[in-house]
Image (cartoon, rainbow, N blue to C red; front, side, top):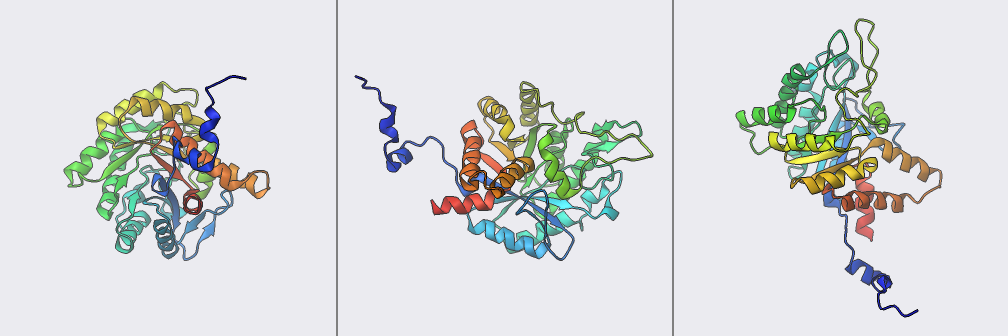
Length: 333
């Protein structure tokens, strides 16, 4: 063999491989999702081993832990008491509600930590949908946005750094941006769930929040969220959502789920100059966790390879339940 082109020269040693490595992940890339409830204890989520619904004091300790590992942003999700759920989800803009209370507490204890919130009605709705549902089972777009803007404003007043509209209503980013600006919160950012697909990977998350669509004998309730979340078969449609969210004032654009939609992350990263975020969702987490508990895979290696794939596809930020474990592994390498 007489070849002067030998790519293996750049793979020969660990030092050389690190020198030419194209993609790197670091703890600052992660946004850590945290579940919180109004109990005085932490409770493991059965479908997500190692992930908990935190009491407020335990959550504060976990946020400190994440900060020490180099994680600089968290996102909060509430497990709302059943007695507070209503058809209009009005608890979502209660100034004394669980999320505003937790935001204020975190900002008192760890003011440097960036806080992202979730804007949608499903944790607060007795119907389990991200928007208002009429008697015929239609998800009401504009009427829902009126409530979402109140929710976003409440979170901003509490001290949120980023508002995260995950509802997929048309026009909600612009309405939230205008509401924040008019009320003096021009510096609060929006991380928009831009391409959020109607995915089967959300099951463990809905278990964690008890936020799945529910039967209601008094009206028709859609059994899925396909009338507002995107069709998994569609990629070009993500360009439309991306263009709209940018125009309406989003600062960061998110693709959810991440692993099955790496092509969408890649396309949007090439299409937009905005940072792209990937959500490494609950179903993806649970599959890796289950296989690792069975001894079928090496958890560390698979997690780090998965997170690397999001960065390689073009994601600047990764929402992941693996955040603390991954940050800890990266510090030891």
